[in-house]
Image 1 (cartoon, rainbow, N blue to C red):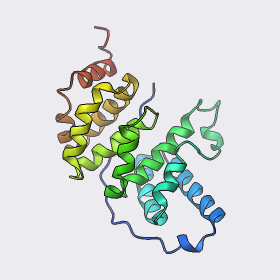
Image 2: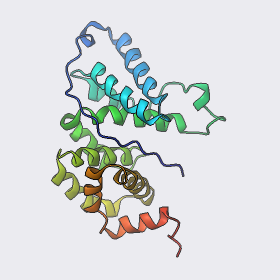
Image 3: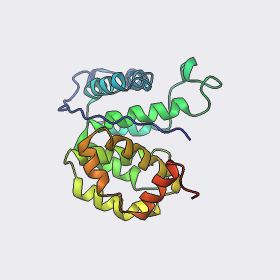
Image 4: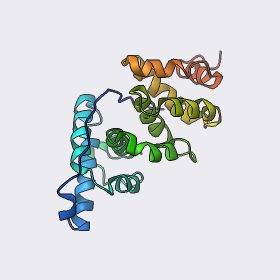
Length: 207
């Protein structure tokens, strides 16, 4: 299983795009797809990935952007050759595409919370761990901290083990880099399921 981490703290104040209303629907769709792909292409360059996502979030912002991003979670563009099978295996481009979308959502902050909660605490999906990671990054910055931690402590024990592994891996890695995320993670480490997942990730699960 390959895990990803992409946690750094960046902020901006979103603004409404003046170009969105001028674009016909088909042109807007191509524009959104192109911009998400431009972030996905940088998924293996952490700093460039985050910088690009912040810029794209500003560029895409508008009254329908959350719905546009939601609609694309499982509909990536055709992968570039270097991210396609057999060079990289199945699913790599989809994983990077979804990472890009959630990194954009991070910059919409409070506006993105309802959607992030619906994905993070809803029916199991590959994107569940992505949503939880973004919710915890926002909580680390004081955005809905209590409600996010309360919900995660309550729901985490019932998550699929695979999702628990991804969540723990992502957040423990982030905690090693960012003290504010570490404060959030410390409030979760007493969960037996969290400790079990951590042991599994460290290779001690069978001991």
